[in-house]
Length: 239
Image (tube, rainbow, N blue to C red; front, top):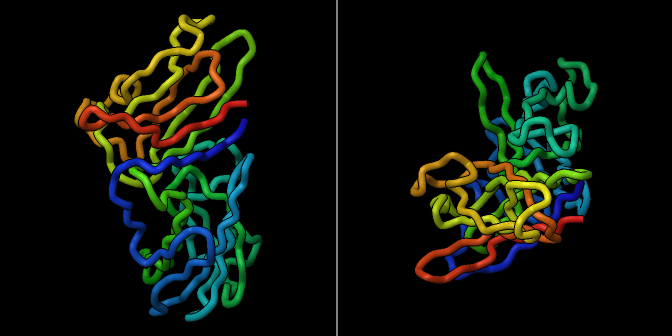
């Protein structure tokens, strides 16, 4: 199973990132230090999960059991695409009462737009920071895919919108979709998102996932059609 991302620019305005988060490609940091401040360093992986290293750099020495990290996966593909929430203590094998000042923690994000840190204070969660892991610096929208190969059956592909514009379901199409084995035609068909995901045609697809069977193809593309024009927003190479 491989995860590949290939982003083509389309004639659309750049998409703003999450508030308080810097650009992917370098280190990012939380914007203020009312409670604690963190830096994050994202390492991309060509095959398998990315890794995100979070480092406490300033502020209170919060206890590891009171700091939660959301959007984390341990397996690829992740058991739940939105990931899970764990305490810093669970992820690092620290005692829950131990402080995290100056400590680093490396996690594997699930198919999420950001990994988030929060602190439980007086029984209420306080957000400490959100670090973008979706790579959508330009273009209309960004997607992730999980490819599962099969012998004597159609391969399966899960495609999820992870960042960017909330495009209408009737403007987004997937190539290579098949219904039967062997597929007819072998290259599959181009099908609109709303027919694959149970959405109404004018519903937005932000955060949505579709699961399809695909034909004998080497690439599946996500197409965006608007105003009589078509652009390949994302393409996934299949191996």
